[in-house]
Length: 389
Image (tube, rainbow, N blue to C red):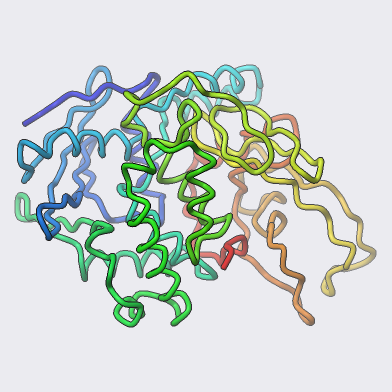
């Protein structure tokens, strides 16, 4: 059965397909041919996972979706999952209204017009990936996530190609840490992965869709292994805040008129500037086009000089990435590390530089993100120093 799903305009599926090719955590997990993409999703039938494959193509108002291998009672849920995955209900107009006032953004907006964020395909996939990234590079964590899918995920062959879906939370819940150890960096990470899967499963996806944002965030933080970074990352790449509640993009039917700005560490919706934090320092909102965001304090310069720094240390504000977003840009991950841990006792910490997708100073807080998306460079693996235990 083929169904047309509408998208908030402007929307261009081709931009989403391009973004998929450079999104390392899910690279190679869908089949893209021309302007069409096929991807497998897991559905729960009784006590077992089963795979369905969706074929998504552009339509006049959004996308045209053909579902293979699904039962009739599952179609609505599959359609909602596709809308969540492609962020079809995200409204980009608030962000565009701000960005269009910034003259240097003109060329970038023409290149990226119609781009909506591509999220993780399921809550289970997002939770597992962000737990596996703790002190682990993106490339390694993505490889371990794919091995989890191969080991436990359901499969469906279509036109001679076998598609593998990531397993559901119910499939993974209850598996001991000793069993998941083969997909983790060490025993501690395996224990945290097991605890996070069990904790999120106990909360229930239905409750996560409907509960107020602050309650969801607080509940996630109470789960062993989920800290501020992981809870925020799940919010950014799996869920989206709508009308004062946390809900998946496809659940726009549940919106209420409670959308208000939040202060301090809470997650907010829309684009703009974060309210003052407890430290009194403000930072730009780190997302656009209605994407869920968490304001965070701008990291303060350390008084302790780095050993390898030539000449006297001169503290300065965080630089803004160049318009071209070159990998050699001064606003790279080498400069914007937000780890709260002290520097090593000897030597110099080295992180692989890449264009900054967000900036913490300068006239355009979204320029770094959009400049990077206009070229979508392959970031390569790097150690994420912002993950909390």
